[in-house]
Length: 85
Image (cartoon, rainbow, N blue to C red; front, side, top):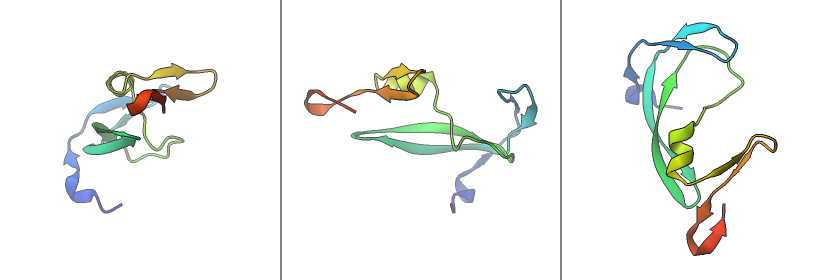
């Protein structure tokens, strides 16, 4: 992606959902766009195969005032004009 120069190198222990522990390569701050909201989020980078591109947690969900549905694997959040994103 050409973002190697923006990686803050730091090694931290991280335990995955299946209980396996790995060491992070570092962190990177990226803007996450959820129309019309843009929020900066810090992502930990690992050098492992993962089914996820990125995991956004509770701070991000709270920042955009989202309502989550685990059953439907979707979120809804208010946007300008009273609409739902």
